[in-house]
View (cartoon, rainbow, N blue to C red):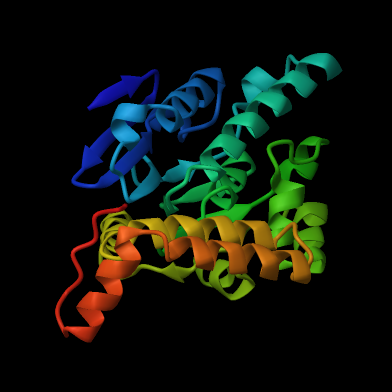
Length: 261
């Protein structure tokens, strides 16, 4: 296990598990947490051969309860701009990882915590999960991507209502809005996220990475541009050993043995 400040990163088989570990502060984001997340996203040794990343918060009460308000309260406009730039840069790096990133959300995912979940590809929620962008209650707006990623995840009008009112939503409503994939009630949410990561890991690794690239591009590209990208990535699959193995295994009625090449 490697420890970067208050962020723990460890490999569990082919899955990289990243845990924010500021339990006493409900895992609130501060400079140390951002540095730790940045380091985990750039740790080539931990990421080498990983099929997915699972991100969670330590303890039962919070995924990430928000940014550290005590630290933010002393910022001036210039400092606030730098803090937002830093958070956006780290979250963009997380979102840009080539493998799927799964958020295992336990407890509060508010403010920066909701924005962190939005930077992940898939979000699983424990029954006690609570999501929200309550920044307007503090006289500010989301600064780590909330106004942008929330619109892309749940649509402009629903995102506007949450950002304008600061209203929190519980796990079931988060699923109905499209903010979370599903509520996990029959096992710990981290275990469910690991199981999902392993399910993804059984697929062709190159194909999964290219799927992520195409799906992420769909939020910014027009339909024609997205279709052209999909066409090119589909063609690229046919230059890989995984495509040859996957189709041969199907025709021979046997499990595929993907190499990731």
